Amino acid sequence: MEHLIASWIVQVWQNRKLGEYAPAWGPGEDHSPNSLFAAAMLQGGFSLQIPEPELYYKVLRKHHVKIHPRRGVKILGLWYHAEGLDEPRYRLPSDRGGKHAGKWVIRSDRRDRRQVFFQDPVVHDTWHVLRWNGLPPEGEIPAFSDTTAANLLAYVKEHKLGPRSDKDLLPVLLEILNSVTPVSQWPTQPQKRERAARSRESSRAQAAAADRGGHRAAQPAPWSEQSRTVAKAVDATRRQRGETAQLGEPVAPPLLVDSLRHRRLFLLPDRPDEDGDDTLSEEHG
Image (cartoon, rainbow, N blue to C red; front, side):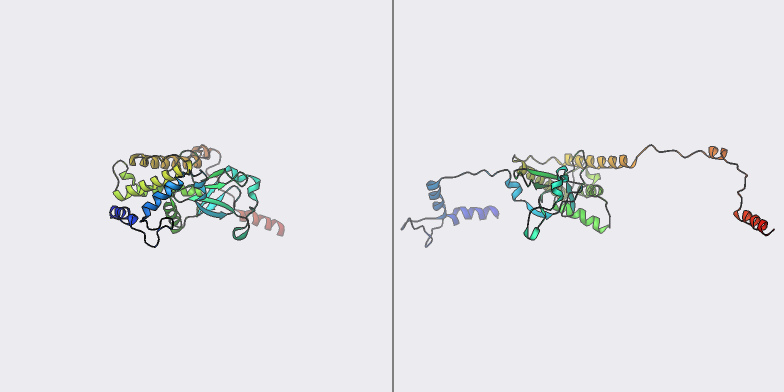
């Protein structure tokens, strides 16, 4: 149907004869939209304009937020931070007035919620990348979009979880990613709907990276490689949580024999009421 409509537009609609909408510079001549376009190209030529790299950031959606010390900015329920936000100049309100007075502008891409972007207030050509606070310090996790982020926050709200930071949300996010590709199906081909959903999200992240970097987007990784990425992220998170839990070497409790050597086994403890009775009898005597 789409091919049929496109063919009709090119062959019929664009070649229709213009009546009262004909150009004034060609009285008595027959013109169509295609002939007018050809005349304009002959008259003015074709001017190719390559967009600047900053155009990618300018067309992203805006968020007017405050910058919190050592925590960053909160964008649609998730926290983002970078070392540059700890500078003293960002602890003060911005120079913006009006409806969003004193707030800073952060831009985000719906296709990839792993980072947001902040324009330098002094050097306007510089954009700072703010990473999600839940990302591990080493390695990467698969890209996730607005839909996955909304599912993550809905899961936390439904189960009444109280994470102390976004790092506690990373295991929940990995569980959601695993639900798209169950562990039992990693060695084999998953369902068509699940494979299409994950490939679509990966393709959008690739397109976002291409728009940001100005280079051609790479092809999405094979399904087996994407499943290995999720598996590596799960293992890395579990290993990091285990290392954090072990603050030191575990100390073994003392043996029962050692505890018996330091005290008499058949010695009965003194009752406090006996001492009190003796004291009272001595006072009355």
